[in-house]
Length: 228
Image (tube, rainbow, N blue to C red; front, side, top):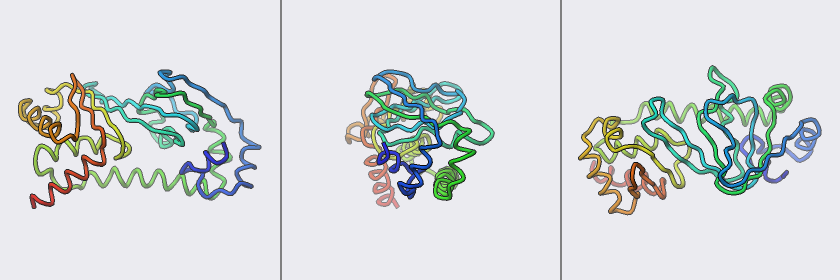
């Protein structure tokens, strides 16, 4: 458990001595889930940090109008939404389900605020995590305008995911996606079929499966350079 926790961004850099002192003070809650178990529902209050020690989870984030949902996967070691612990909205943005058998621990918000943040390395790691996330989201607001519909689709994906790696699933009706992209349903359908023929995604009923997100984004960037 020591080695797994020390791999998490929030604990990286802590020596074993300091980490042992932390574990002597904190009350760890050990959690086990079977595949398919719900770990956390969206909009529930974030009053703890949940650290994934073993296994894989799926996150599901739904738009406010409930027209589309983005599904992502994460493997241990992983911490669930540490940015939801503070701020104006302290509720989880996504729902989380165990994709495999999962082992996790939780640490209460009160201990994080009253003890963990007293350690310089943890405090710096936490601030870096929040700052990097805020900067990445802010940078997306100032990107150049999309060149075409393919670029719009890739931009839509990029704006709604936490990590640009691995498999992603977009659950959406074609007409709703077309409305969001400000284009026709026919054009969106044709463009998605072009991407499917290039083995960059897979179309299912009311679902778009991106098998390798990084591959899709790299392919799009190379294509845009050629177009310019």
